[in-house]
Amino acid sequence: MATLCDFRDQSGEALDEGIALFFPGPASYTGEDVLELHCHGGQIVGELVLEAVLKHGARLAEPGEFSRRAFLNDKLDLSQAEAVADLIDSQTRQAAVAAQRSLQGEFSSRVLSLNTALTELRAFVEAAMDFPEEEIDFLSDAALMQQLQSLEESFTALERAVHQGVLLRDGAQIVIAGLPNAGKSSLLNALAGEDLAIVTSTPGTTRDLVRAELSLDGLPVRIVDTAGLRDNAEEIEAEGMRRAREQLALADHALLVVDGSDAPETAATQLVKELPPQLAYTVACNKQDVTGLPAGSMTGQAKWVSISAHTGAGLDALRERLTKQLGFESPGEGSIIARQRHLDALRCAREHFEAGRNQLQQHRAGELLAEELLQAQNSLAEITGEFGSDDLLGEIFSRFCIGK
Image (tube, rainbow, N blue to C red):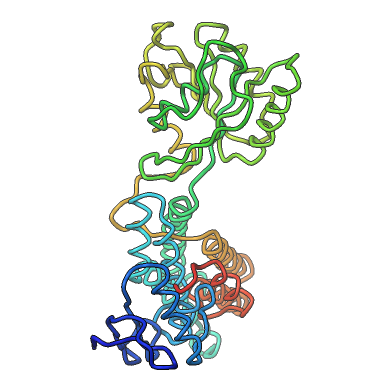
């Protein structure tokens, strides 16, 4: 119900005229009685109204308190509450759409569906143990084997979707590295679509880190341009190189830029030695407009892409390779937003499921399968908040915006 009224302080003095909106519980966002006061714009008016409200006994909300109350009052499950913050913090349109789907319960529904399938399997196994006179053979029962296979496929599909959701939410960090004057800064500018880094013909122009945030087919990406890596650098450039190596240690992927007109294979070999072990990389063979090589993926060089940062040739192929190497697929109609804790809980649930299946198949231990299935369900319940600790809730909601 909306009411036009005067807002007055404790002495009765009018502060503003505005709208009071009352939402009676349990139909409100939090499930409680909620009153919203809509005053005129301007910092002073808002502060005066807030000061008067606080003097009447209210207190300021803690970060995430409204969403936490909604969760505690069963208006939202935990993954939906987290989606509220993820929607606000979305860096790309695709991430916002995926967060909205999770807020509407699509992610929760998929977790619930998997949990229901685990419950049905547990019921079958425990019934067989409770009624041994039925002489159910766990290993030869076709229905049981089919359920196990179906659950394996469900875990795989949901884990893939959650992994994509984590990438949509958190994005990835790509670090550009290369020898001086290979075109690193030019490539950063070309990918970002604006002149973020200074470009000159003088080697060693980039001394400090230059960062850009952009979208690669919907994937939020933080790209870091670094100082050229070479021997005999002077003091300031050496510090830039130290920072470059520091960023490479934190990267999800390295983009190595080599001058295609000046011994690119030798340069690439030198750069790969600078990388941390196991860090995936892509070699961007620059200056295609000079070398005349076909733009795009290079035959016989699986990790190489021929590009021209000057003309833009080959950049689409480079973007495609980067998203593929980061394990990202273009968000589809059923994409969701997710967090690393969701992926960890899902993987833990899968480990319990696989352990139980192995116990059944190797040792015919139905009771151990039932116990592992229960543990798998507990792990899944951490995603929606049906099973979790107060410490976990405090950590999650403390990262929300004030008043959300």
